[in-house]
Length: 220
Ligand SMILES: [Zn+2]
Image (tube, rainbow, N blue to C red; front, side, top):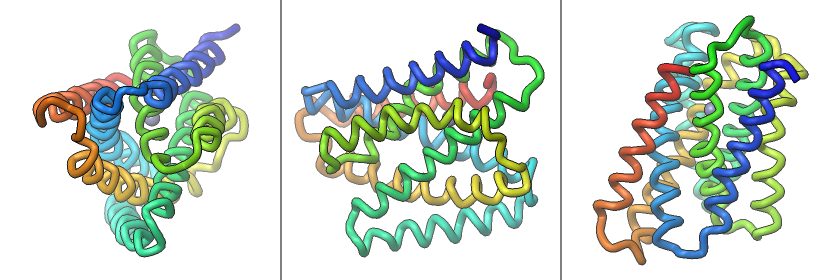
């Protein structure tokens, strides 16, 4: 097995591990901590990775920010159709992010061991985020999504999306993911704190998530 294939396989496994941690945790307090960690991570990755990728390699910053802002506003208004609609939008955005990651891995000529490790590690909280956004779905649907979403990474590596198409869609996806993440964070902060001892624990988990996200953006 070559390094790229190994990296892709380990990334899929890492995303599954993060999703399984969230899905299998029965204690609501611990689930809240995982969700908070995932959300902190999500914001770091949207601003540190997904948006810069779209802006630097794609259609330029003005177009990128306009697309992201418009899709954020549109996704936020999806709540009128129920919170499930916004969650589904966020999930679709993260799925596209996975496809793009596969494309990036396939395109890069050589990956340093540190970059590969950071890339693989960042899939654990991403798996948590992805599954946290499906709160309210049946367990069977959540599991199917968690399993399938991770497989989008090797699929992206195999299908190679043209850059001209990738950048604007990534900008739109980041707006949608941001709206869904913000909504989920508000839900965690409002009701999800039930069962945790204090605000400090989820807040510290969210801060740790931001730190992991920044680390992943710098090294991966
Ligand atoms: Zn990612």
